[in-house]
Image (cartoon, rainbow, N blue to C red; front, side):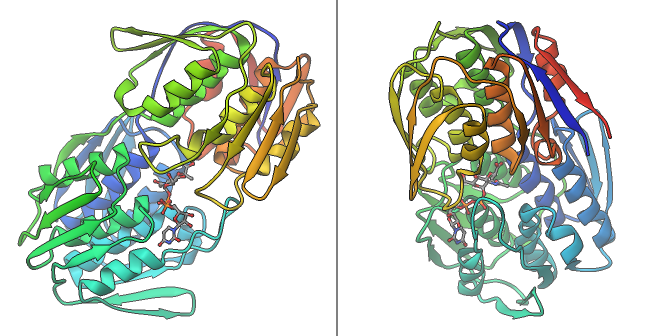
Amino acid sequence: MDKLVIRGGKKLKGAVHISGAKNAALPVIASTLLAPGGSIIRNVPNLRDVSTIGRLLTNFGAEFSYKRGNAAINTKRIKTLEAPYDLVRTMRASVLVLGPLLARFGQAKVSLPGGCAIGARPINLHLMGLEKMGADIKLESGYIIARGKRLEGTSIYLDIPTVTGTENIMMAATLAKGETLIENAAREPEVVDLANALVAMGAKIEGAGGSIIRIEGVDEMKPLEYSVIPDRIEAGTFMAIAGITGSDITIQGCRNEHMDATILKFQDAGLVFENVTGGIRVTGPTRPRASDVKTLPYPGFPTDMQAQFMALMSIADGTSIISETIFENRFMHVAELRRMGADITIEGGTATVKGIPMLKSAPLMATDLRASASLIVAALASRGETVIHRLYHLDRGYEKIEKKLRGIGADIKRVKK
Ligand code: EPZ
C-alpha cells in the first residue's frame, strides 16, 4: 500500500487549481442512467470513486470511458439492473443508482451499503421516499429489491436533510407521474448541480438549493453534456493548509459562493482572504486563533471540513470546541493527531482542542477520506518527517494532492509499495 512522506515546517507559496467535485460528479454520472444514449460529463476528477461508479455502470451493460476529466457514458444497452455487493461495499455512494434504475426500468437490485468508519449511515429515508412514490421495496440477503411500474409523484418530508437521499428521490421523481415535493431537502451545492444536470436532460425541477424542491415528472429524459462544479471541500482543505503553515496560496477554479461558512470560520481563526480573478487568495496567520465550530447541513459548516479544521485548531492560540452533529463517529483522526502531540479531549460529539505551539512528526494511519486530509494538514506544519499510511482512503477523494502541494513548495512524496 502506498504511503506519503512529508517533511513539514515550510511556508508554501503559489497557486493550486481545484478539481471537479467528487460529490457532484458521482450523482451526475449516476443520473445518466435515466436517459438512454450517449452523455459526456466534464470536469470529473480522476479519483478511485469515479472509477468505481464507472465499473458499476459497465456492470449494468453501459459503456463508460474516462479521459482527462471527461467521462463518456452510453446507457442505451442496459443488460442487468443489479448493483453487486463487491462494488457497493467499496463506495456507499453506489446507492445513487437506485433512484434512476427504478425510475427508468421499474425495478432495481442494489446491495445495501453497510456501515462505514464515520457512522452507521442508514438509507431508510431514501427507501421511505421511493416507497411513498409507490415502489415496492424488500430487503433480501443484503440486497434492496425495488419494483414499481411507474412511480407516482407525492409529498415527501425528510426527517433529516440527507444529501444522497434528496438526490436519489429527486432523480426518481423526474420520470414519475405527476408532481413530487421534497420537503426539508438537502441544500448542498452538489444537490443544485445535480438538479441543473437533470433539467439539462429535460426534467422539470424548481427550488433546488432551498428546503423545498418541486419536481414535475416527464415521460422521458435525454442524454446530456454537462460540466460539474468545483470541489469546495478540496478548496477548503487547501485553506486549512495555508492557515496551519502561515502560507500564501491562491486557490484557482473554486466557487467562493459555495464556501461562506467555511471562509467565515477560517477568518475567525485569523486567515486573510482576497478575491482574485478565477479564485481566492488565502494568507495564513503567524499563529491561528482558537475558534469554535459546529458542523451542520448546508449552508452551515460542512462536516467534510471538520477534521481539517481540527488540525488547524491543534496549534491555535487558545482552546476551541468542535461539535460534530452529522456523523456519530467522525473523530477517528483525533487519536492520530494526539500521536503528533495534539491536546484533544472528546466527549460524545464534542472535541475540546487546547492549542499547542508545534506538532511533532510521527508515523500515522489514515482511517477515512477527510481524516487523511487532516493528517496531511497537520504533517505540513510539523517539524520532521511524517509518514501517512493507507492512502487508499485519500485517493477516493483527492486528485493528485501531493503533486499540487509540490507545485507550491511542499516537501511531499508518495512511496509506492
Ligand atoms: C453526503 O453523504 C456526502 N457524500 C458526504 O461526503 C457528506 O459527509 C454528507 O453528505 C454530509 O454532508 C456524497 O455526497 C457522496 P447524509 P450522505 O445522507 O448523503 C443520516 C465525503 O467525505 N441519514 O446527508 O451519505 C446519516 O446517517 C463524504 O466526501 C439517515 O439517518 O450523507 C447522517 O447522520 C463523507 N437516514 C445524516 O443523516 C438516511 O436515509 C446525514 O447524512 C440518510 C441519512
